[in-house]
Amino acid sequence: MKKLLLLLIFFIPASLLTAQTPDTVDVDKLLLESKYKQVIQILSQKDSLTAKENYKLGIAYMNLMQYPQAAKQISRALRQDAFNTGYLYVLGNIYDLWGKPVISKYYFDRVLDVDSNNFQAKIKLGKVLMDLKDYRKAEKVYGDLVLSDSLNDYFVRRFAFCKIKNGDTTAAVNLLKNLFNTNYFTDKSSLLLAKIYYTEKKYDSALVVVNKALGHNTQNAELNKLAGDLYFKMKKYRTAIVKLQQTVMFGDSSADVHQKLGLSYYSLSKANKMMPGESPEDFLNKAYESLRISYDLDSENPITTMYLGLILKEKEDYKTAVRFFEKTLDLIYPTYLDVLYINLGASYELTGDLANAIKAYQQAREFAPGNTNILFYLAIAYDKYYKDKSVALKYYKKFLAKQKNADPKLTEYAKTRIERLKEIMHFTSH
Image 1: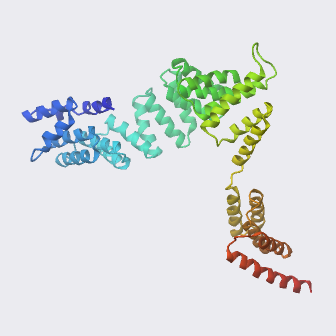
Image 2: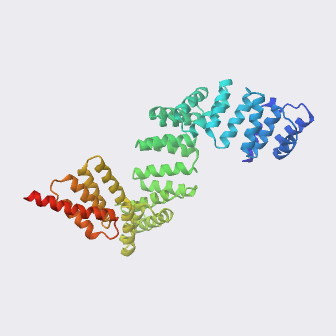
Image 3: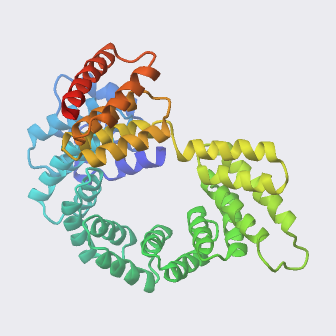
């Protein structure tokens, strides 16, 4: 953080640090020495401040992360010197640091209105537009920056990301490939290119990128994880294990990594051929250890719980296996699924699609057989759907027979409707 603050000071234009009086000489020296509180003490005691003094006071507040006071002082400097791009730039910076990207964008736009070639303002504007998720405008800004430096990894990567967000993945791949082929890539641009290939299921191409990037930085956890994922997808489980172990070693010990490790070990335990010194039992034990770590980190993943159940079943620990299988069922069929189907049925009913409404209510009943209200919803749907009222009558009666604490309005309606349906059926039969 201290290095960042020093950098902000060093960016102050030299013209704004021109010494004119003993007071300003002291202030400039204090700013360069990062003695911001002393700067504030000296300048706050003055009856009136010049534009440059307001600016320096704002800089002191900014480096102490007192952004409201910093913005106030720089705004005063700007009122005294309305077209000063240094003041506009720093004000944009303050609002960016303050977490107000819309206002920050306004000031960087103003810098570029005055000086369309201001390189630093373009970089900051691009960053703010990305924060605002305005990828159309950000693409234009980064496109201009790439024209000025086509091998700058940061510019190309951000330009490519905008292309992806705007639906032009092919252009993004071409940009990143050019960077990659000229060896100007970084870990981040390599990851972005490899992830595009991964999404498109071009695993071989993704591996070429990842392995070349790992040649430059073997200790990158993200690259190792992606390599592990790719080898896992390609069923090269031994290599996947090596890469996933390195991922853990270099700082990523997430549930997902341990799950992939466990699944790789489990797959090897089922392999027909073992290498010297290997046994299915050893792989099964390692699979259990890795999946158990994954479960401790995330107990809500049904794949993890299912494979733990399978391993425990093979180990003949049937009671614990049952517990994990039951847990898996709970995760696959969550308790709120009946609510989803009830609402789906109601929506179908409101659109007049009674056939699908009935199917949805029946699905809801499968997931929550104890929810007697579903019987009522089915009775209503059958009542509307069939001329033969016997099915509706049956469900109204089932609802009344099984309900315990239903809404009185529902029970009253069901009773009234049963009597009415009996009359209809009586007269219809005669």
